[in-house]
Length: 404
Image (tube, rainbow, N blue to C red):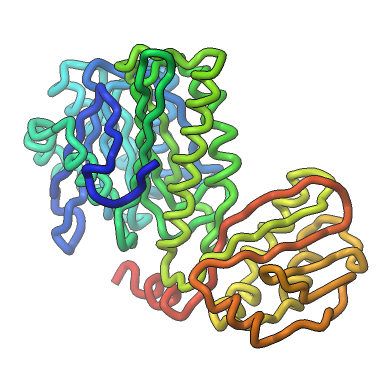
């Protein structure tokens, strides 16, 4: 599997073309429009934010998928403006953009999926987008280079584009899967401030795609946290062009696709956390011996979202007491006398009390760019893996200055 790197490494699925451009939404003048077209249409499945405050494009996207029974023609993403908390005008602007895109393609307006990312509460300058649409669509290209430009155009505070792809043989067919993501802040289970688009040339019905997408998202994007905030615009969209002729039904082909989808989502999730705002350390939390996976995930979430824990990680401070405290506040009825905590292979807390350990060795472990912390709850056999990070002064600086 390839991830963000040379375009020659990208396995580009057939049936899709990409473009990127500048509409003048971003003050920086950097690309802020991204376009992906399913040249002969695609089936789709999507998952959206669980925040009760949702952006206009999320509302419109949900409605469009319902209207077309999850069959779409194109995707249009703007960055630099979230089009959230913008009232009736925000919804109207979304629909106008979809209508004009559809008119160029001679398609139905509801076959266009809109997405936005950026600052909340600022009216979307739809006229800038509408003016840029004809040239944007005209320059679409079915090339890895165009796909990478698409990935760059959806970035906000990201420092690098996030792409992952793979290919596998299914009988006489070669199936390709490619994922593109943005996200670096407001990352929390129930997805994140992230947009994720997964393209495949496999063939599958919307229900088949949804059945495969949901567990992949739950085990990857719903198991990461940067800062504990859940965004208003989160979207994961899976599109299948069917160009490879391989159908996702049953048998080895389905299993191969499921595994590929999970690897793509897992890679993008890791890239998002690694590029978290101000992140210096990526932490893999392994919570074990829970009664069920939900318990393990709840404990991991409590640890991952504790400012005290995250700031200790920023200083590579082996303060296991903060982790134990977070476990106790998770809502899971743990027995502290059965809790063990490990920094790498070194046990630092056994039975809820201090266990003799080498503090310098622990400090060195926590000084690595990526490391593991393992927790045993002593309640059962279930476990969960969770990716998170530290909380640094740079994170505060980025977000304090975000709109100014």
